[in-house]
Each structure stands twice: as structure tokens, then as C-alpha cells.
Image (tube, rainbow, N blue to C red):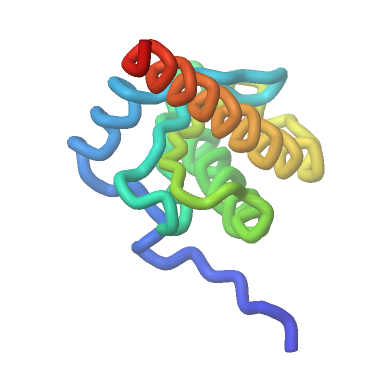
Length: 132
């Protein structure tokens, strides 16, 4: 039987302090459609979580909400392919609403992986500096 892909509360950023921590500690990556801030969770075995920050530059409320729903759905479908232990905040660019569906899914997947790689490099650098 196929794995059931859900979007439970455990994989959502919901509190202001969670968003603040991601913006304070995270690395920033971007592509044509999205900016993403990626931070490591306290426990790297926990599933990755998603938060969205959609500005008014994206459009009026209907457009912002549609963009938010598309991002959540892309995350929900790509979640099994994403590295675990990350907190992601997606910030769509104004043209994200016109992004083809597959491009949006690919963007979420690739930016999460790129952010995880940058976090790993940052952690390795910190360990090297503290060891010397």
C-alpha cells in the first residue's frame, strides 16, 4: 500500500518563537521562485517542518493564500524526499504564483537540500574552529 502523505501539526511551524529561531539561526537559499531559510532542529531525527512567510508583494489576500496552499502541498508531497531534522521557512517571490507545479515542487526539494548542505558545512567549520 502506498504511503499516506499527510500534513499534521507536527510538521508545521506555528509559533512566533519558532519562526524567530529559524530566521536567527538559519541559512538563506533562493532560486527563481522561492527564498528559503533553513535551520537545524534540536533533534536531527525529527521530521522536517514547514513555515511560510508570504508578503503583500505577492498580491492581495486571495493570491497570498493560494500561494501558501501551493507551498504546503508541495512540501507535503516532497516531505519523504527531504532531509530530516530541518525547520524550513518558505518566502515566495511575487512571481511564484505563476510557477509551474513541477517547478515549485522541485524548488522546495532542491532548496531544502541546498540549505541542509550549507548547515552541514557551517557545523563542520564551527567544529574545526573549536578544535584548533
